[in-house]
Image (tube, rainbow, N blue to C red; front, side):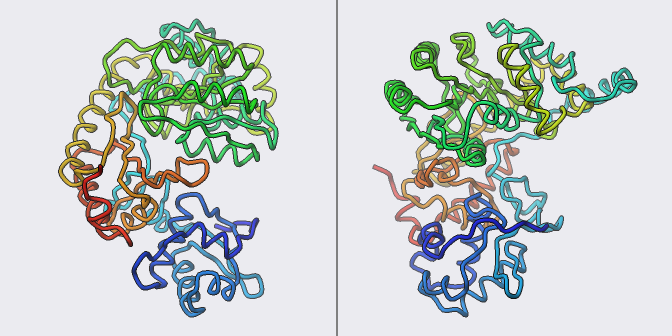
Length: 480
């Protein structure tokens, strides 16, 4: 894969990103290559970034040019760097099928030896195949038409509208826009409402790809810290008032990554704050169906204020491979979105929409099984952590698909590098941070089968003892 070189990173900045890349160990090309590879997979060193010259990099890191040359050789062999005489070196990504399997980063590895805890995405439910068969029969009805559906198929919009209405948010099909996932939905809203340089309020931590979308339009994130039990609504309200953000991006339903749900009283306070400050909010409901409490859910945020644009996705409830999401907003806003969408795409795939419509017809049964499976796997992960990493702290989440763990030391990025070498892939806390902080935290999904979760945590515990500057005294010692 060829990337157009864009920004150049200077030696000083790369040193800052690398941090204590070799810890107390002797610097080596193997350790440096692993640290650079992790920055690429973590999204902090984008493909196409031009690297400093060997001399500058050696001086900045305080190592020999020979070590730098060997490091670049390793990265080129793995597909993480490319060079051309007279043009220098730049960051790349493996483009072969084998390379993608070995270094998939945020993509699920197909290599059975690598256990992926970097993605909180479940496999397809058993009902999917039957839904595909039923959708095939309905596909013939669509074939005489042109196939372009910028709003989305009517049958899918009707079923999505019905689900919102059943949750206490009266909705018509005209208020639904089908998208290519929730990330696509958020990008469309950003393109419509936010200009470069404008502020967007976000929770901290928050969903990493939402931050990437903000960076993509050069918006300025305003981070409001989450507290132990969820949202500091007083602080959030103060930030809305003082910073006057153009938009807020919020995840009140099983927040990613903490798994906390904002209760009804908190939603009412938040709705009043949005109304008082005239702030529009994108509420991400991607995880709303993964409710593991068995309790009556609070009302949707959009039922409390017309300042909310709701986005959702089929990826967590059903399957990421469908690549479908939606926007729920006013009819007028949806019409504006359809007009603006034409600059990016002309609609979502018809067959996948038919499949999702069939799944929604049996959604209650599918989701009941999905949630029961999540409860079982959540307990399996909790038990494995208690056995292998007993001093990590976490709150058992109300829903969603991951634990947010305090590992007791600011080393989660280094732990992620070590874990990769032990055959398990994890997402460090910095990935969920606006500014690269949260190094005391790591997200651990419970989407793999139980036996794989146990093995992944066993490997992670082994990696924790190998972290440079870490070991038992840092990662496994009792936390006060």
